[in-house]
Length: 101
Image 1 (tube, rainbow, N blue to C red):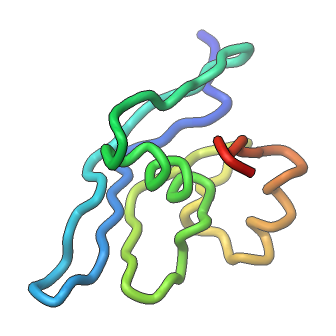
Image 2 (tube, helix red, strand yellow; image 1 turned 90 degrees about the horizontal axis):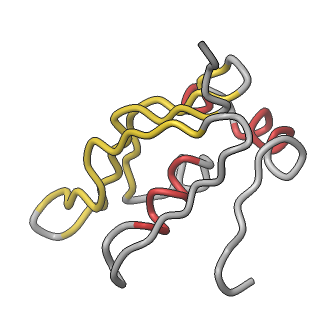
Image 3 (cartoon, rainbow, N blue to C red; image 1 turned 135 degrees about the vertical axis):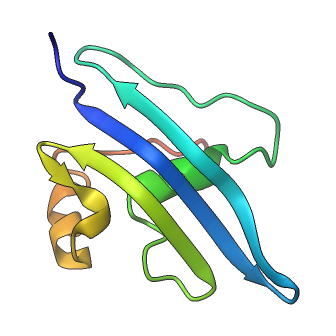
């Protein structure tokens, strides 16, 4: 059985508001298999960008933001890596194409 090249499990991202924490995305899970392309499609404000940015570790450590879940790539859980390690992976082994660069 072929293993996924990227596996996201129970990804949740919340933002701090005056009245508490707001879950922008909750429990997102998906796999990307070899030679497969994943496109996140949906209405404006549905969480596409937050999902992608959270999976890439771009929101990690941001003030007023909590990210939880697992993001497995190349045998490593990206959610547990330090920023310096993530920088070595981003753009070299794993990348994201933004709609408006």
